[in-house]
Image (cartoon, rainbow, N blue to C red; front, top):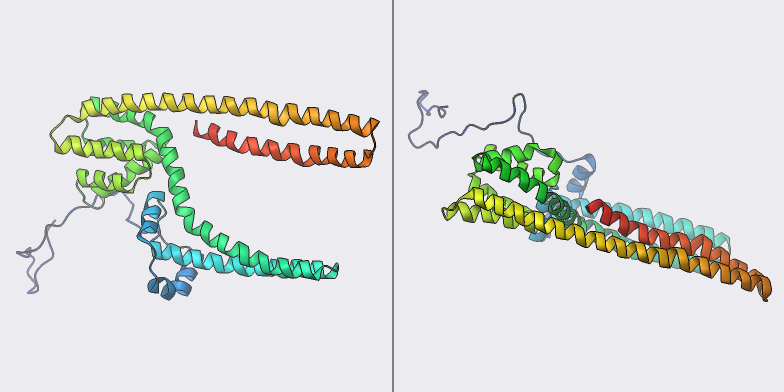
Length: 324
């Protein structure tokens, strides 16, 4: 493809013009940008000047990149301000409603306390949660990458054994959606090489910088180091595959032991202890005084203590099972 013609109208390429690079995209598709939602556009228009006067910390941009949230740091900070404003207004309305209900019940003092405490205490909490959301999303992505990296390395080593080039390996890995976030990381590397025209080593360095997974980062840095030092990538891929398989087995063993400990604790704390407690309190209610008080305690144990303790065990158990 020739460069545009000069100012005098000739069709020849300019002497000092940079060579034009062909961008390869899928047939029928066009490069697009991540469009803001209506709420994000309103937040940017409303808080743009505030954000530009107080730019966000560079760590916010890093967290957004690791979380693959397609927003700039200033755009996300404007969204945080807008969400906090709306949450504060909603909490203020809720506080007024609670004050009105308590005032009609003769508890105006408690209503005034709730009216002040709800927006004052909850609004900063909303701001802190929104500001830390990219970091939490990035950590969750890092855990999902670590969970899939062992199987993904088996695919990479198989491709390397067939003498496939590195850029083609990551291109094919990006197409294997079964590997989840690992395939997404590989897709971003392929995007840098095919769409942005970056060489594969630079794309791997950038991928190692923006990934939230330490294992994936070490793997990419090892690929760059091995390639630049003149080493063979095939033995390196096979070595990393074996290493990640061993680490995955140890991690699964640790998780199974933790789940077994949770199961034993669940039987003791949630099943056996409440059962004995219910039997003892029921006996005291029958043969002793204060039967109505004992019945209330019994209802409290059955209606509050047992469900809360069960939920307290179910949530971490489900988290461990989902990471398996």
